[in-house]
Image (tube, rainbow, N blue to C red):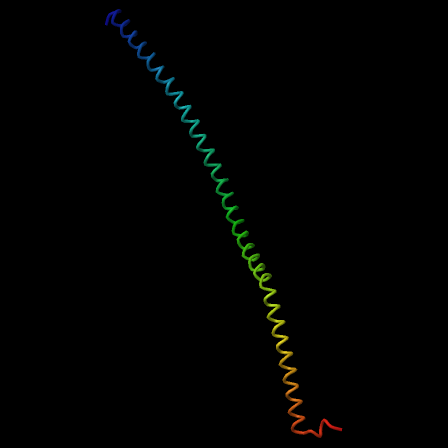
Length: 121
């Protein structure tokens, strides 16, 4: 190999090294981009864990709220039905009193009819 061939080879190698350096620099920026994406995904995964915990807490609170609503609904129904129950109790009490008065009157009449001497003096 003579000097001209060596110079040509060195020049070719310099050009190739220059091209490769450009490609390496380009790859470095892409690696940085990939690193930023990986970091962002890691943060999102971490945040998703918090979101999962928060959703579990919300579901637990919803269950408690639903139970409380069911209990409140039962109480409201009981309060709404209370006047009807009171009316029914009052009606039943009045009917009982009327039956007792009529029954007592009939019993007194029967006793008076059967044994008139008991009531006369």
